Every structure is written in C-alpha cells, then in structure tokens.
Image (cartoon, rainbow, N blue to C red; front, top):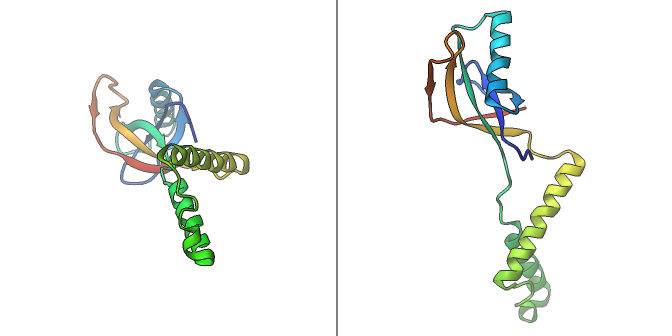
Length: 144
C-alpha cells in the first residue's frame, strides 16, 4: 500500500489506462506533455490528471474470525463453548487491529499488496494552454 499522495495521467478516461505514478501534479503533467510532444498521436491535447488512491482493506476480519472460532467451538462442544471468543469492544478493536496488521505485513512480505487504485479528483488539462483546464469530479479505476 502506498502512503504518500501520488498522481497519474491518461489520455482517454473511457479506458482503464491511467499510467505512471508521480509525486506531484506538475510531474504528471510534464510527463504527459513530454509523451504528447514526442508522439502527438492523440486526438487532442487534453490529458486527464488525478490523485491515485490505492485500495485499502476495510473488512472486519477480526469480528468474522471471532465468530467463526466461536461457531467451530460450539459445533464441537455446544453450549459450554457459548462465550468462547466473545470479546469486549475494547479487546475486539485490539484483536481486529492486530489481524489487519498481520494481513498487511503478509501482503508486503510476499508481494500481495494491492496493485490497483482509483484515480480521484480528476482534472482535464489542455497541454497547449496550461491555464485552460476543467475540473471534473469523477473517479476512475486503474492498476499499475
């Protein structure tokens, strides 16, 4: 998972083809300008620029895991296991946070981090006239 804000650009927002990740909006615009000036094979000079927001897991694995553990124990021991892994709210939060951290560590260590993102706050920039731009409020999914 990426922690700092990164920018991406594409030529056609009808496709999932945002590419390149840049530290600043200006770097993304300059990279698009360089590509456009080199190839000029795009319909016009407009480019879509936006902030890449990487997927972050929001599942409640801690709660689900506790429920499953309780169900498994109940299946084997019935009523005597009824309170097994029924955590207080405080302990449930600690347990859930630890499970999330375990998953993130595993993903990072073994290369399973999300490689996809949604591009937010997309703006249309006209490369021949950088003072002319349109701010559009739509999101687009992509991957790197």
